[in-house]
Picture 1 (cartoon, helix red, strand yellow):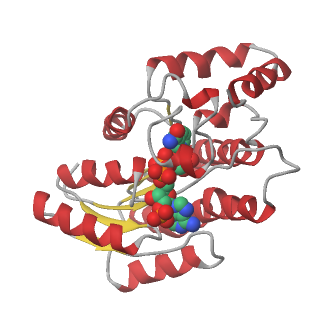
Picture 2 (cartoon, protein in one colour; picture 1 turned 135 degrees about the vertical axis):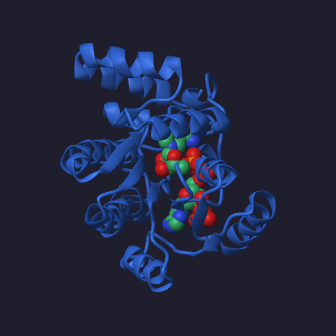
Length: 260
Ligand SMILES: NC(=O)c1ccc[n+]([C@@H]2O[C@H](COP(=O)([O-])OP(=O)(O)OC[C@H]3O[C@@H](n4cnc5c(N)ncnc54)[C@H](OP(=O)(O)O)[C@@H]3O)[C@@H](O)[C@H]2O)c1
């Protein structure tokens, strides 16, 4: 890859923060997006000082309707062309569906699904015109089956996987690659935000964020895979459930999700 400009949503922590370091370290300019303006500004200063790249800060609350359009317009007005889009911002929520807060779930759909779709459309259309570009959508191993006790989150990630595979098919012939990154449980701020710290899922086999981002980065450079599942254990699990009855898989997920 020559010097590119990479827009990363959810750049203020976890997977997005590490992607920002990874791309800047490889000599690429970055556009950092999240709500936490102070964290983004500190990160931009760090990246520019350490790697001699340009780091733009564009704070945005992607749970707000219209935020993606404003983000696209702001970036375009600044004359920034986005070569690589990392749709990473997202969050989950743990709990039984009748007890979880609806507004949180509506916001989750807005961030995980609607904003991701809008940004793929706005920036992806420009990539198709230029006949070059890459989009990485952060889904999850949650995308491969239903998830009792995190029903809406799992459903949002199934959408991300499906959309990414379809766009990869449509846009491959236009020189634009689209990939879905499907990490399993990863050590970031995600489990706190989703109130998952007591869940069995996060008590064992959590991957480091560095390993997840390293694998994803390598796959992106090689441009061979549409679906990236970091970690051998996660790949085996994701592969094996394809051959099991869906109802049985759903029951297993419920057991794994329950608090200890
Ligand atoms: N950690 C895991 O186990 C795991 C596993 C599979 C998939 N994933 C996926 O990986 C992605 C990144 O999560 P993470 O694990 O890195 O969690 P994280 O550390 O909590 O980071 C989430 C990022 O999303 C941003 N964000 C959240 N709501 C936003 C909003 N309304 N507008 C703009 N930005 C928003 C946050 O920034 P601000 O708070 O500053 O806005 C933060 O930068 C998510 O899509 C998640 O579903 C995570």
